[in-house]
Structures are given as structure tokens and as C-alpha cells.
Image (cartoon, rainbow, N blue to C red; front, side, top):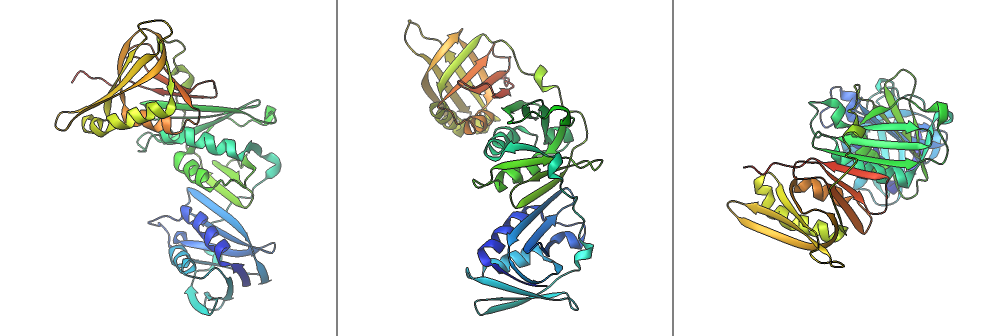
Length: 380
């Protein structure tokens, strides 16, 4: 193999595939990144057997070939090189890659590419297209609600569901639920796969990889492999699916409410952050006091309060448009902050039916995103 690439392109590619390199590999080959020529480009790939990422970068290929190199070592080395052309020459007898860049040189010992796990072939004709910017936003608005531990594997994943021209993503950890939908440009029709669960970590990494230059994400499920594939312009992400039945999330969403609050998202977020300073000492429990206006044409008031037995307390009031009765309800303030962080609209709506009923958070004027938070007990 003899190939030349630009240092910045090589480093960017290694940074992307490096997300799939395990910190503690079960097999030595999994600590390596695959480097191979393919169709006058350079292909980089890494996998931990649960998640695999492949990147193609532009290159000048003189001789075809392939090798796997220690991923961290190779990435660290490329990071030290100047933004110039990198020339790489493989000695197949010793499995050593000779590297030259702007007068600097290095020799890196690798392993045979034949030992690297095979990636499935992507079939674009069977894929479903989703706008890249929309998919990235959907990931941000859903993935944070997935469970962080894997004691219940299905809750550590995100449900993806296609129904006609509607694409839905949902995540829940037992205390909160996030559901985001979008309308596809074309109906999936009878090509719709059964709903499937993708590990939250896969979608987190995919969300980081999607760039402003990507126009669409193609989603495909290879037959009988228990895997899903996400294809971008020059990146392919392959992930194992999570087996199991996702909870009936639609049954969790309240359909009625007694009190509705509409407030400015930024003001409510700032109030939550103030109360969190003290609420973090009380299992993140903060009280939300909702007081409708006492006179017509006047705003109501919402007070977010956090308290620490040892350090003190904070109350942050804000004006809001309130319909219904006065209510005091307690939430995990961290959960409220996390959902408010992913709402782009200026105003947000909070609905509830009482101190023991779930709270529903959604952007004002939109019905494609809904978040449900279970209340906390303040008996103690």
C-alpha cells in the first residue's frame, strides 16, 4: 500500500472512527483501526463488536493495500503532524507502516487486516431517508431520557418506529419519557420495518458525527443480523440492536390536565438552575409553585424553589400565562433542566393535573415533541 492524504482529513477521520475503539478491548485487533484503500479513497474503520464506524477520506492511491494499526497511537501521532501531505508506505513483510510528513517520519507496527471483523454491506436501495438536521435534533431531544445503567437493557436504548410517513423516536428510564416525531418526505409504506431499539450510546455518537454538510441519513436493517446501519455522505455507522419489548409509551402520556403553564423557556431554565444549587443536596428535588393570576389580564406566577438543610435555599419567581388551578408539585430539577436545554422555541408549556400526577413539557406551538416527567415525593 502506498497512499497520500492531507493531515487534517486523516486526523478528522481517525477522530470519528476512534469513537468505536473500546477502552478495554476483549481482542487485541479491536484496539486497532483498519486502514485500507478503496475506490481511490482511504477507508478507516473501527469496532467494539457492538458499534462499528467506517469513514472514507480523499486520497492519492499509488498502490492498494490494507493494515490495522493501534488506534490511539496512530491518532496521537497524526495529531502532532503539521497540516501538510502525509505519505504512507506499507511493508507487507513486517506489517509496518512507514509515514512521512513535512520532514518528519515514523514507523508503526500493525496487525494483518484479515483479522479485522467484517462489516456488513450497506444496501442504499433498501434504506429509509431522514433529513440529517432533523435526525440530529431528534436524537438530542430523546437520547438523554434513556436509562444510564443497563439493568433493564431496553430502557438503555431508544425506540425507532416508522409508520407511513411518520418517524418516531422514544426513550424512557422509568422516571421520564421523551417522544419526538417527524414527517418523512416519502411514505415508507410496506417497507416499514418493525419497531426496533438502538443503544442510546450509538445515537449519541451518531448525533456528534452528523455535520452541517450532511443532507440526509439513510437507515437500513440488514436481514437477520440484529443490526442497524446509518449512512452519511462519507461515514457509515453499524450498531447491534437491543432485543426486547419497549414499554407502551403512548399509555404513559397524559391526555388531560388541570393546570397549564406557558412561560419563556430561558426564564424557566434560569429559575431551575438557581434552585438546583441547593436542590442537589436533596436528591435534586425542587418544588414548583404555580399560582394563576388574581386579576384578569394579569400574568400568573411560577416559583421554582430548591432547599438544602445544611446550606440554605433559593426561590426563583417568573411570570407566566397560567390556565387552571393553583398547584405545588415537586420534580427532579436535573430532569427539568435537561429537557429545557433541548427545546429551541422561545416558549415552553408545562401541564399537570396535581402534585402526584406526571408533568408534561412541550414546546409552545408544536406537537411533534413531548416530554413526561414523574413527580417526586416531598413527604420527607
